[in-house]
Length: 189
Image (tube, rainbow, N blue to C red; front, side, top):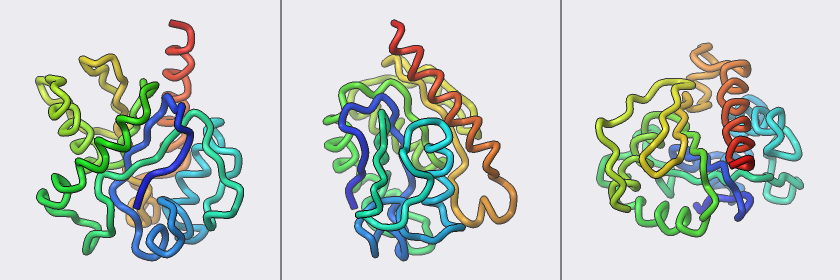
């Protein structure tokens, strides 16, 4: 499942993988998994931060457009129990590399979950960017990387995280407000 969004994006969002009953069914990541699903939770936050024109992601012809943002996934197909193996992540990294190589303006990366966070760091190592010591993943924790990008960790908006309160809308908004501010800062440089 390919990513989608603005090809001139300065914000890159890296998710885990397409959802079996959302993206695999609709053909677009973070789409069609229902009003309590991760897609609408994410799009609501992106809409409130000015990165999405509507707060929902129902189907590929719903009119959703991202502005200055692109969403990709660390893994290209739905893994069993949403737990990809290291081999699956490594295999899919070539797709993430190709997709993000076509996004030359990215200055801010929001990693949804530790898998997205670690996949981005692994991709950078493959590009020759030495990230030592390895940044620690944490929700709303930001790291300036040696290549100048800002990497922000965010709990994944899975139903497990949102239904248990580990992640709520305010917490998600904090991450994307910070991403918006960082993107604006890169405009001024």
